[in-house]
Length: 31
Image (cartoon, rainbow, N blue to C red; front, side, top):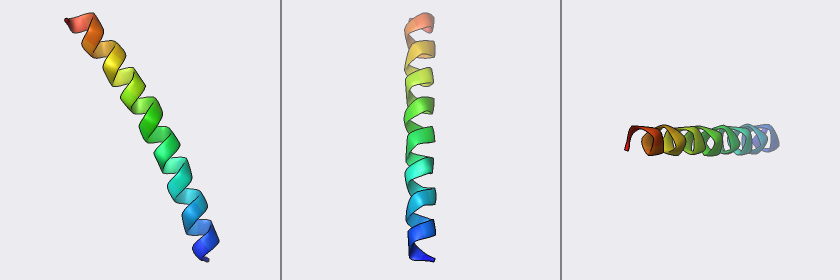
């Protein structure tokens, strides 16, 4: 069970990283 949770967390972190990259691109466009 713990292993599944850790895998899920790593997937969430990867998604968060992609979102951060998109947000930075949008910020650069707005600037």
